[in-house]
Amino acid sequence: MQKNTTIKRIIVSMLIGLVIGLLLNEVTFFLLGLTARKPTVVSITIPDGTAELVSRGEQPPTLPADMIFVVGDVLIIKNEDSADHQLGPLWIPAGTSGHLELGRPESLAYECSFQPGNYVGFDVREPLTLSTRIYGILFAGLPMGMLIALYASILPARKNTKNDLQKDVQP
Image (tube, rainbow, N blue to C red; front, side, top):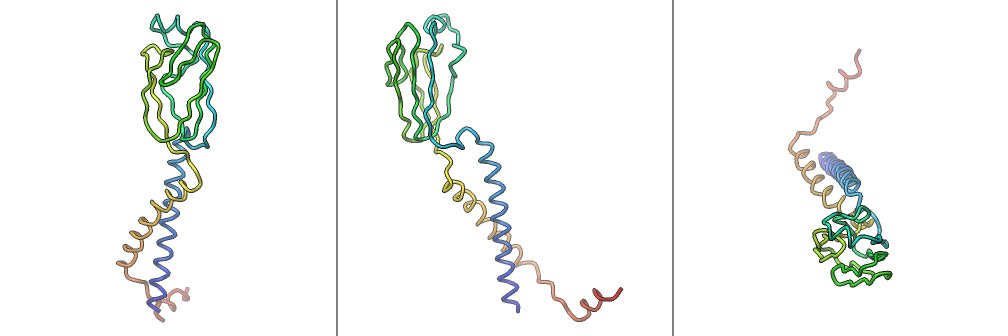
């Protein structure tokens, strides 16, 4: 009888730990937002007059200063300016476009001719997939379940005696 109670406690503790892991991870994934997506094509257009704005030290209004991507994203830069521009390894002549494939997680700082500081920062992160979510839930939930099971094993099991049962039945 004692063995069944112990096994039940362990199973319930592990389930509680997995539920806590699920809640913690889903809240975290929700807050990540930007990288909680599949890889996609991201287009940036360099508007006409950007070279002039940058030479005066002004930020072009349509261009972000720093960007966050996921592995597998393809960045397409379309140059509608009258001047040629550079973004890291890309040379983009006026009226053309270039693309950059982001293939591994890393933080990049590229030379960038269409930003006032002449550089742009990229963060490339792992995309959020089903396996990532399951791994996160298990990584948090299993240890939590083990700790709950350990603490539950320290607590004595409540024994139902005849006196306890009679007290529960009497008005």
